[in-house]
Each structure stands twice: as structure tokens, then as C-alpha cells.
Image 1 (tube, one colour):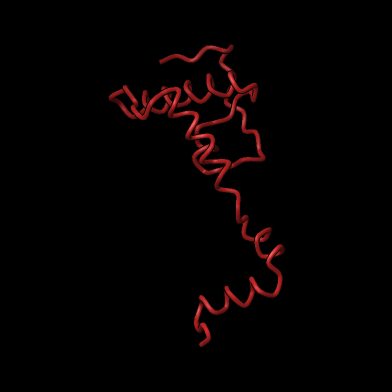
Image 2 (cartoon, helix red, strand yellow):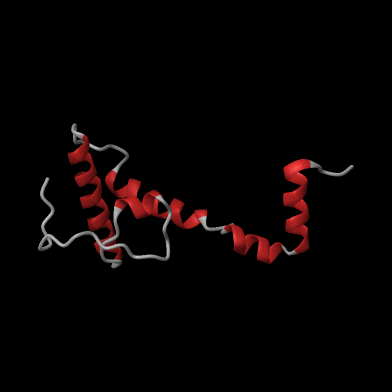
Length: 101
């Protein structure tokens, strides 16, 4: 019994070079994002208290900023965390260390 179609192509590609296949597709990277959000939600909960969207974004940025300071990582934008950017540091615009809500 053999696999056909797209699944068959993926299986054959994997079987030719499992290590290369994993590296090319970024397989096994999800755990980093899951670990970030797990710790983040344990500390801050799953609720955003702001009512307006603009203020929601600022609240989340502030929480990410504080969380990263606690971890010693510096500032990383909330968007980069959501997109799963793990190896890049994206700096938020400097506001003198102040985050206005």
C-alpha cells in the first residue's frame, strides 16, 4: 500500500533526508513559542482588560516588555512573539523606558 498525492510526496521527501527535511521546514520549532505563551499566561492570565483596540495593543506590549525584562531578554514586540520569531530581536520604539496606557 503506497501513499499518493501530496502526502506521498511529503513522505518520500522525508524518507530521503529526515534531518534535512526537518531543518528546511523548521520542524520542532513550535515548542519555543508554546513555552513563551505558557509562562506569559501563567504570569499575566489570559485576559486583556482594555476595551479599545489601540489600548489593548499597548497593554499587551507592556506585558511582553515586562515579561522579557524578567527573563533578561530586553524588548521584543508582541507581534514577533505571535509570529513565532524566536531567533530575531525586534526592538520596540524607545519611549524613554515609559509605556503610556
